[in-house]
Amino acid sequence: MTQLMGRPLLEVPGELGGRPVLADLLAGVRTALVGLALVGVPVLGLWIATPYADSDAAGATRLAGALWLLGHGAPVLRGGADAPLTLTPLLLGALMVVRLYRAGAGVASRRGLRSRWGGPTAVWTGYCGVAVGVALHCAGPGPFRSRVLPDLLVVGLVAGLSTAAGFRSVLPETAFARFLRSVAVGTGPWFDRLPPDWRPVGGVPAVCRAAAAAGAGLVAAGGLLVAGAAVLDAVTGGGRGMALLGRGPAALSGLLLLTGVLLPNAVLWGAAYALGPGFEVGAGTLVSPGGTALGAVPEFPLFALLPQEGPGGWRLAVLLLPLLAGLVPAVLLGRAAAGHRSPVGAGPWTPAATAVAALAAALLLGAGAAALGWLSGGALAAGRMARLGPVPWWTGLAAAGWLAAVAVPGALLVRHRALGPAGVECADAVECADSAEQAEVVEGPVDARPPAGGTAGLVRPAPGRGVHARLTVPVRRRALELRARTYALVRRLSGQRGPTG
Image (cartoon, rainbow, N blue to C red; front, side, top):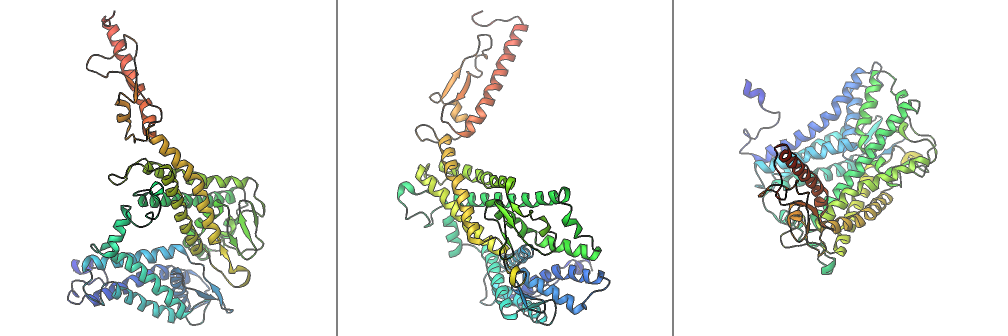
């Protein structure tokens, strides 16, 4: 009995070991049902908790199915006027993608590619089979209705890409894996067409790391702005967001859940605000550090965090956040340019190659910012509310411009400090400090000299040495000075004198 209860539902590789296609098909069905349950259980719970619900159980299940489709980015019709609803809750979308990715990786790790119809194809088929049933069920009358053919196309595309990515991540060496490995060591064709002096050898991983660090910094800036706006609204804004939550337990729970699934969208909108272009909350509106023009907006807790209409004023200070987000990428690129984490024999980059790597990271960040800005926006209805979110191409240009403005001079400065006068890398503080040609011996007093066989003297980093050396060698020098003075004090107390005393 314990063994039977410990088996996961629909996970039957043992019973279906001779039928891998059917087992993979059930894996796709299970993945879709788990994602549908994550959406359906809260919706049905709220429907049960609502004392006077406007719809029956079928209407609640249609609402859950429509939200599940919307989480994949599929368009949904809203209301009796069939207004388009295309604003994707990114939290739900991330959950669906992660589930599909893990399903593809799990199938690949168990069996690999043994059958034409097995593996990711069977997982995708099972997932899309559930999507067909959901789309047909949600096509009936209700507050939210599906558009069967467009919804199935979007769900099929998302499921196919996510499953294939998970499947490829586990398989052994393939053509795709060889391509990724070649890019990881920097031998891809990205910089091959540049002149030798402008080519950052092995720079693709550093460029990707710098772009990812810059993106993480911008997302952190967006989250900081959302949190700060919530605190300001609660303290000085009259509690506009809190006033919307006092509508009973069911309404409170529904608003909190909806706010939670849309919180990643709000964070990305905050990042676009910090970059400067801002975002829209309806046609003809603008929310940016330079000024805010809103008009009437729907009553929703996240919309209550929007700034008041008028010029930006002190809000222009948020433009410092992209500058701070570009410091870490500049350090990463500068260290890569000095030879850290580079392939064997690559050597330091030239200043031109360092600038090229920084510009490449800025372009990569701009493309990612434009894509995320497009995914985070959409429409809530027809007419005025048909445009919400950042303008993708403006957001991408701003992100690329800010990173280029910070990373290019910053990487060049870090590279200059990490390399010596002759352009030779200083690997660490000990190497820089102990080299007789690159260090200056600081003799202490006669009585403060350390004993024979001890430390020969106190050291200073040579000018132009690495950043790590210039930060750690002064600490080491102070420690050696303290040791020498302590030794001299012990000699005086014991009645001993120095060699010249």
